[in-house]
Length: 232
Image 1 (tube, helix red, strand yellow):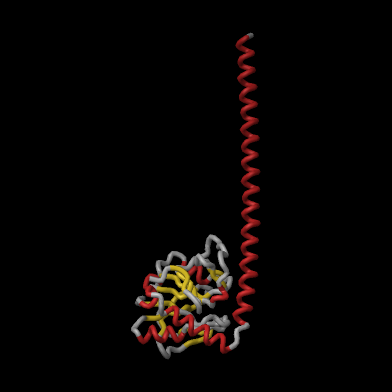
Image 2 (image 1 turned 135 degrees about the vertical axis):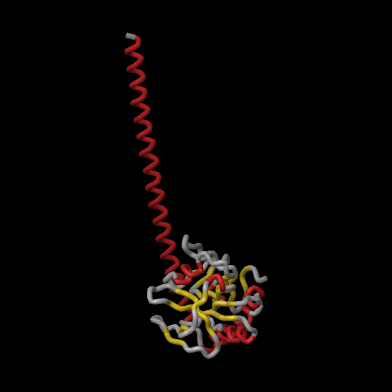
């Protein structure tokens, strides 16, 4: 009889333990689901904030007069020339300015005169970006976005590029970048060891703007008024 009562107590203990385990498991699942929902909400809010910031800064950039744009672009070129990691590079990937991005082509020409090799972005048919060589006077064609690209030049491997000059809609003080929203530069720069220099006008600096997992940060940001970050 005592043995039977003991078995019943043992069975009852196992049942209660199983119920507690199930309850704990359900609680953990509920917490995980709530955390996932919160992360999704925060991610959605961050994307919305970046989209609004992108629109605001592009509006400001497009509102520049021709005189303002020329003077500020010249100042950007002068500040690029102050960054040793850029001027001591063997090959720099630059860009053709569009939608009032800083015009760095005068700086590019100076680099070519010094013997620094230049690459430019090229968007492929499958929507990816690669680097191609650029020389003074080389033929160009406009891509689907109306941006000139070198035509008939050879491709450059990412590991052969020392510095990438990266335009953007906005940058943070810690090197965060808000681009066009298409992700070309983030995909291209991912895993690269090249020195990454964001290029923009100073009003495009937006403090700490955070970033998403796939975003690639800059080593420095060069504006018409300053260089943010390590300059050696």
